[in-house]
Each structure stands twice: as structure tokens, then as C-alpha cells.
Length: 258
Length: 256
Ligand SMILES: Nc1ncnc2c1ncn2[C@@H]1O[C@H](COP(=O)(O)OP(=O)(O)O)[C@@H](O)[C@H]1O
Ligand SMILES: [Mg+2]
Image 1 (cartoon, rainbow over the protein chains, first blue to last red):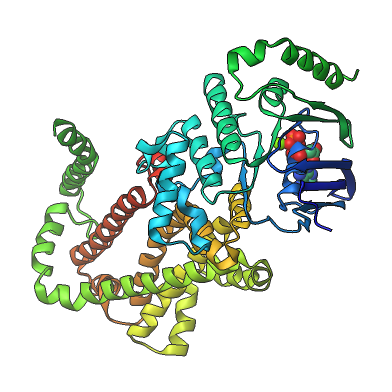
Image 2 (cartoon, rainbow over the protein chains, first blue to last red):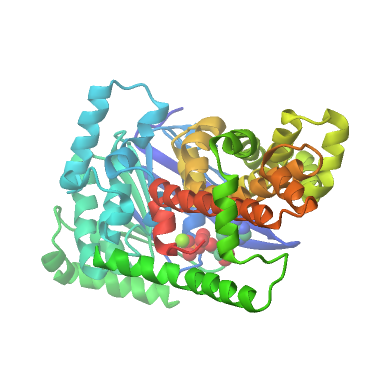
């Protein structure tokens, strides 16, 4: 029954929270298939339930009903071969470890030779542009660089799936564009299936093959847009492409409620 | 260098002023319980000898260090486990809270009547005095692990013990060190109390004996030495804190 083309299969996913007796319905009947190597952006207003959704996909939150399956296996715990990056880089890094040790952390529960670990850590640090900062401590780095460390750590075990929850929301605009390109290039080159959550429509279109808009309360999928823009994309040209502008207008219209 | 000399000057300014003031006032208006600093200095010369250090200071140091070390380790280990295992916490924490609420002065007679006079009683007093506050602050620190790190732990599939040792405890090290630091005073207090209540050994006993035999200057020597031990340990701890967890203590300045 395993369907290989569907890397992730989300079926009728709903979530409510109990808040001191009252029930808060956050998500309702979300269904979505993601194929292998695809880049999906989930977009919506803040507070709509994006984090809840991506955390259910990550196996960190239990759905109230519905299922998430990865490679045909039901997700109940965080799956192997998944990288996860969140908005608060400073809160997810370990201040007592140097950059290279932070990045090597995922190896602790795995059996790899010392040499192999060293090689992988060097490789990902190189890929995120931090080769010269291996011995620094996270708190000695700027926000953008800290987020690069978190990205490197999520990539060090060669995940097949990368989940990003507003990863660029707390870095300044210029750095944000750099990090967008960094992620886009890495996942394209390594063919990693990627889901990014963002409240920024431009960012969603710029990065994704498909943008999923969720809205309302409880939230459900309100619009899906296929992004047929050539890769690799460029911050200046892609964003001024008429197709880009048109999709942007469409998404803004649906976000405002038609 | 100049900056350092400057800061030493300002640090010593007030104590020197107090000593001079004290000396002058006790010259005008002698009080047997407040001998002038010059008399205390004389007493220091009389009292302090190798023999006295071995008989009165060394036992105190042994009690303080062994007691503190054992209490701190036990508090850390048990506190970490209670921080991780919520059910165990619910069972044990009320009792720990209760024991912690009883001051050392009230516990000593109890320990004395169970264990009798001796070194082990004095050490146990310090162990118990240190154990519970360290335990409580460790539990609190571990229980407050931020969600991002709990998620990380689950994503990396570390499991509970590995997660506790390699993520939760080090993440809490700032708060844990603060708890350990605060327990130094508690340990000194417990040491003095256990020595005063009947042991006849150590600085605490020296202070009490000097007082009851009206050697007031000697009593002051004892009091000063206790103060100096506290001051030195406090300073040592500030150094350790800034060395071990610079990201936590760097922003907090040199206040303690
Ligand atoms: N653990 C939780 N318990 C109770 N309510 C929660 C919990 N997590 C999220 N919520 C609520 O669910 C809603 C959606 O939150 P979230 O998924 O973080 O939104 P977003 O990421 O889109 O900003 C919010 O109203 C939030 O308060
Ligand atoms: Mg969110």
C-alpha cells in the first residue's frame, strides 16, 4: 500500500486545544499530499495554526483527528530523517557548545565514526557559510549566523524531509533574503522534501513549488497555488516577474477574504 | 593595572573608614563587648597559630567542604531526576519542601539525638542543609527547560536520560549554579550551628567558648574568620559561575 510518489500524506487533520474547560478549535480537515523533493510553503496570518500544523507533521503534536503519514508510515513521533528549524534560533541552540559541537549534536544518538562525523560537520558548516566560525559559541554570533547554525544542525544527518517554522522571521531583511537563497539552493541540490511555514506571502511564492494558504477559525486550506517559476530563482528577477506579481495579488486577495 | 588599583581603593575605602571610626569611638567610650580593632588585631596574633588552625579551623573546613560537596551532588542528582520524572516529583517534592522549611538550628538537636556528638553529625547537618535547597532549585531549573529544547530532544530521539544529561541539565546550569551559590551561606550557617550546639570542636565552638569565658577579643577573631571564609567562597563562586556559564552570568554583572 506504500505510495512512493507521496512522500507525505496528510488526511483530514484536525486539532483542538483544551483551554481551561473551553475547547479551542484551531485546525479543521486539512488534507494535503506532498511528493518527494517538493518544496511546499504553508502561509497564513499569525495565530491561524501554522505552527500547530507543522508540529503535527513533525510528530511533536498529536492530532485530535486525522492522520499524517510519511513514506506510508503513520507519524506518531518525530520521524527519522527529518530536520526541524524554528523561528527562535537563540532558544534552540546550546550555548555551552561551540558551533561545531552544536551542529554535531544529532550524532550523539547515532553510530558514526569520528572521522565521518567530522567530515559531515565540516561539509554542512561550509554549505551554510560558517566554516570559519566552527570554534565560536552561538552567543558570540549575530542572529543570522545563529540561524545558519540551526540550519546546519538540521541538515547534518542528511534528512529527506526538512520542516521550517518561520525560520527567517527574526532576522533582518537583508539577511533574510540571503538565508532564503541558502535554503533554496541546498534543498534543490540535495532533493530534500521541504515544508516551510511563513506569514510572508512573497517569501512563500519565492521559495515554494506550491503555496498552501490556510485561513479562518478553525483554519482549513483556502487556496492552493502552483508556482511555476524557473529555478534557480533570483531575488531581483524572480520577484519582479509578472507571474510572481500576479500570484502575489491573488494570494493577498484571498488572505483579505476575497 | 591603574584601573585595578583604583577599584581596590574604592573597595577598601568603606571597611577602612569603619575600622578607624570604631577605633576612635571605642577610645572615647569603652565597651567590653566592642573591643577596639587594635585589641582584636592583638588577639589575632595571640590566637592564630598552626596548632590553633589544626584544632579549630581545619575541623570546620572538613565539615564545610565534605558536607557541602556531598549535599550538592545529592541535590543535583536527585533534583535532576525529579525534574525529569514528573510523577516522582509529585510524590517526593512535598516532603522535600517540608524538610527544607525546618531551619538548621531546629534540625541539629534532632540529628544530635539520632547520631550523637561527632564529626558525622556535623557533616550530616551541612549535607541536609545544602541538599534540599540545591534539590529544589535544580528541580525548578530542569522543569523550566524551554520548549525548543524539549522539541529538539524529541526530534533527535535522545530519550529521557540522554536528553536530561546532555540537554536539560546543561541548559539549566545558570540557575543551578545560582542555587549552589546561595547554598554556600546555608552551609556555613549549618556548620557553625552544629559546632556551637555541643560539639566543642571548630570555629563555632571557639566563638561560643570565647564568649562564655569573656575572651571577647577572641570571639571577634572567630567571627571575623567566619566572615572571611564566607567572603572567599562567595568570590570563588562568582569566578566559577563566569567561567562555567558565561552566556548566563556575563549579562548579570558582578553582583552577588
Ligand atoms: N499547546 C497549546 N495549548 C493551547 N492552545 C494552543 C497551544 N498551541 C497553540 N495554541 C493556540 O492555537 C492557535 C494557533 O497557534 P499557532 O499554531 O502557534 O499559530 P501560528 O503558528 O499560525 O501563529 C493560537 O490561538 C494558540 O494560542
Ligand atoms: Mg507560529
